[in-house]
Length: 84
Image (tube, rainbow, N blue to C red; front, side):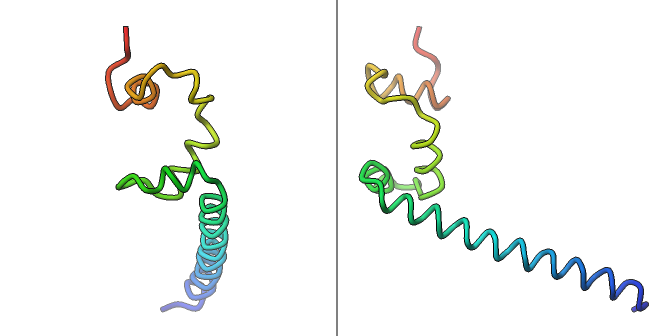
């Protein structure tokens, strides 16, 4: 392998290793926040719902009191057709 390619590949490897470290750090922070919030802990009991989905829901969903039923919330998420 040419030396110029080795130099470039070493830079790329370093970049990927730094990104992996940042991803691990962010995953740990997301897991910590999901465990600290009682609502998030309840949501993680749903099969297939993990810390990333829970923290996204907690951050983006308006107050649940604004939904008349679970179906309205599911429609807001895009899981069912909109209620008319």
